[in-house]
Each structure stands twice: as structure tokens, then as C-alpha cells.
Length: 269
Image (tube, rainbow, N blue to C red):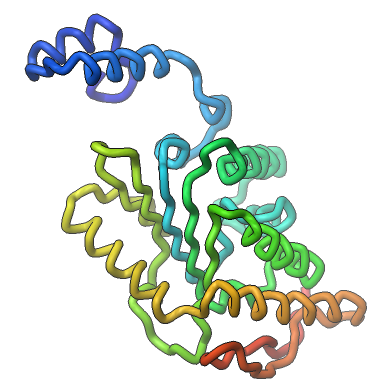
């Protein structure tokens, strides 16, 4: 059981409650219910996901704080955007595996619209909006998806404009999963060589502080929508320009921040 290769039986729970002197009947009943539910295969077990542990924690979260400096958060990605990322990933995987990963990601996204959904707050670096993943058509649809997501009452989206310069999350991507009390939260930090789960109180407070700071320096949710809409419009214009897959640079004003709403250059595939 300690290795995670088997689930706790009802007898295990009774014995552990006795060992750790858990005498509150409501708590014992809650643990017994969790043991029964753990025997039911979760939907993600049918997929070969390298991040299954994360998906399980995400499914139990009451609040999710997501900071991304390079890509759109998985819970907000369109299928085409996700596919474009998968097709450029290393090591290479088969198209069948890519499609399976996309299916799993789209299934994950249902938590945002389920009954009693978690609160989802995402902060993106402006670079996420300009990075030409899949081409102008894919990016136009992806930015429209971001705007649509902000209409959900449990979703908050903000963008840190280039004009802010350096900031605490510049070299990182992380998620903070807040779980129902008394279970402590978990920080998930994803990297090229692997992922790390941080559970120590000091780590949690540090990342909560960083997330609060990036929220403070980012555009307001309202100004963020305006900024995304402007970039989406520009990508829409580029769809009909032969051979042109990257926008030219211009700076616009959104609230108290200047936001570069176009990037420069031509991309030859």
C-alpha cells in the first residue's frame, strides 16, 4: 500500500484508525468512504498518462492557481493547439499517442464546467499569446477559447505584459492545487527533466506569494480580455495572407500597461 501499487481495504482503514487513535466517527466514516471510492477506476487510468498523479490531485482540487510563461494552460487549450505542441515534442511520439493525450486533456477540461467546479485562476506571460503554435488559424481559435473561458464564473485569466519586464515567475511554470481541508495543498512544478510536487508549508507559502505577486502586476481580468481580443483579431487578419504566419510588431495601450499586440517576422515552414 505504501508504494501506491495497491489500495487500502476497509480493514486497513479500520486498523490504521485504531493505530493512529482516530476516534471521531465522522472522520472514520469519511476515510471508509474514500477507501470504497478508491476501488473505482478513475477515468484517467485508461490513458497512459505520465502525469496521472497530477490529474488525480487536480480532480480533487477546490481551487487551482496556474502560472504559465510559455504555453496556454492545459485546461484551456484547444485540440489543435495541443496537437501542434505534441507534434513538436521530443522524444517523438506516434500520432495515435498524441490523439490519446488530446482526448485526455479535453476530458480534464470538464472539471471547469462540472457541478461545484474548482476556482481556476491563471496568469500568463504575454509571450504565450504571441507564440505561433500551429499557425495563425490555430492561434486565433485558441485565443477565442481563452476569451470564452473567462465567461465562466469560476475562471479568472490575467496576462503580464512585456512592459512589466522581469517578474518572479519569469523562469518558471507552476500550478498550486488547493485541496479541501484538512488536506494541505500541493505545488506542481513541471520541467523538461521531470516534474516536482512540493507539499512543505514553506514551499506552499512561497509559491502562493509568487502567484499573488504576478496577479498584482498583471493586467486586470477586464483589460486582459481586451488585449487577447486585439491579438486574436490580428491573427485572424493573417490567415488570408499567403506565406505570412507571424504578425509584425506594434504596441497598444491596455489600462495602465502597454502591450505589444503584434510580433515581427515571417515563419518559413
